Image 1: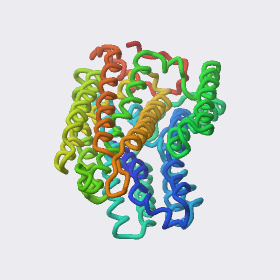
Image 2: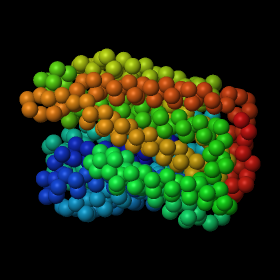
Image 3: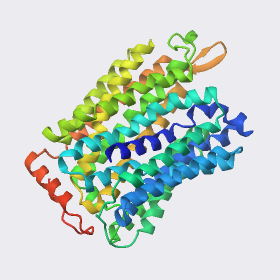
Image 4: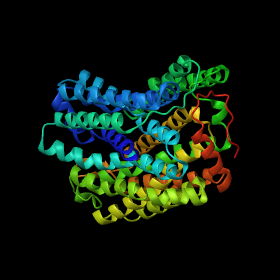
Length: 477
């Protein structure tokens, strides 16, 4: 079961990197301007932001396995639509459907909590969390290889086949959880949170093109603030909220989510730096003149190490608690980026740095769901894990925007072309190292680990599979 859920997570995360190798060629393929084809990426980001918290709550209400299958069906449908597209609108529609499948990883983690024995939970959660990085890291070279030697539509057909395979495996091997939460779905909370996230992420992702001080960008930021305020007010007065903010402000949940945002920034920075350094021409003095495939192969080891580090992460979590695992992960990531500030001059150096960062990220990403699940009742696991995943996604969005600004501002002229300077990438690496340090500090505010009490609480939560409500008692930490 764990392998099937991890495979499903890898398939969904592969989808996120699917179009990266063909982005420069999409205007030619679709006979459309680059400003339009860029929506193939932006639309997926927005759809994922809307889907993750919504699918989490629906999973708590109607069954996590059922929502997993619905998510995989959306992925397969979107992939087929993309495979059959020859213009911008159907491709963007397909990418939206693919983005709606982004809730698979938090849903899978929630299934594990409900059906696995406590002793196996930490390792399973660490592996499932690692699937996000594995799919992203392996997706880039695989997609680049397919794009180089086959028609670009094959990327989407491959995604459809993998999604269908994952869905069949889930049907055959993954049991449904008996844990349910009662009540009705919070449509007001879902709509207002979705609107706020769309406004915020549109401003972040398009601010560089529209201008950070343009009326449209500033209006979107302002709208996001106002709508988030309304959403918080609504959630606090709703009996069955989409996100229980009273639970979210508890110390363990709050600081885990804050650490997730800055850690999401730290994780994604490498994806902004390494591919560009590999592909920039050698005449820049620091570029390595490689291909997109080479850039993908440089990133691939980080995804593999994230999966391999899972057993170590789970052992540390079981013996010392997820707080220690998160703090160690932050330290390792900070060390990796610290080395990267001064060592980006060869392929092997980049691979070593990527492996170090991947190891730290794998440890931290395995610890975050464990911290969340240790502080919320079983009936809210799906919503709480999904909200944590959303926090990480916001961190990666901030990383993309901030790194984009730095790289655009710190440039050099080479043969009449304007290219990023080496110092631009060093600044991004330094910011990522600083983010990891901030995550370390935030993790320091988490409650201490009490091994015997934690095991007792997890065991009691696991055996309680009766329908529950949000008023159910929560373990104290």
